[in-house]
Length: 251
Ligand code: 13P
Image 1 (cartoon, helix red, strand yellow):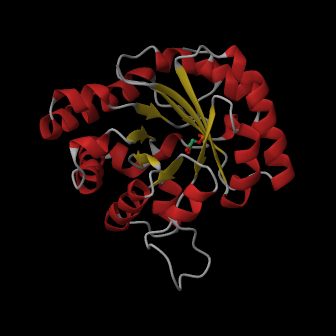
Image 2: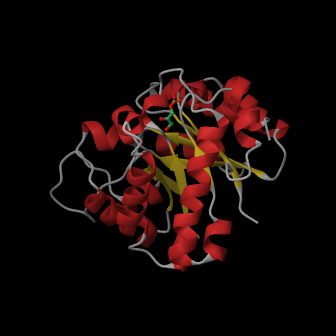
């Protein structure tokens, strides 16, 4: 059976000391969450080493928010998958809509990033999702299908076991406007069908698909009750340990 996961994406928030305190608070409260729910914190690259120390030996797993599309070398300012893995992190988020929108992240680059992440034994949270214009033009199914095909269809069924998908409608990120549980379920079920048609039913049934976009303790229960929603990728609400754990308790 596929894993349930609640992952916090801190984005470009907190200083290192603040991040360490937040991670400690998440670890302290993680005992309240049922054992079957995976907990991940995704921190800025600067925070990975000290937060790795905080979460070591606990149930809380650590993720980067991005990694480079090149192995190593003269790429000033980039952080490679090998560097992320060497901090003790087990995961990296890739393809977040903010990276696609502001930093020119293309599906082609994402294929390289996913390859390098997997080669360095990192698990991947791959983000997909349509923007408001695409939703209003009723192109959301097509957009999400294309993103899924362009990136994930370059990998094998075996490699898919190290990948989680996060569906994040761009119009619901940081806007307070959540997709309704029905809207989210509709796309999650669609993504699972796209996966089933290509990889077969088993890969599709085993794939964890998270919802992201203004997820809070107050709406998580309804979202997580949907058959194809396996958890959440949480932005703003992950910056408060109480809210983050409150979301995980919605299972
Ligand atoms: P918010 O929860 O702040 O809407 O952000 C969602 C997100 O982008 C998580 O990756």
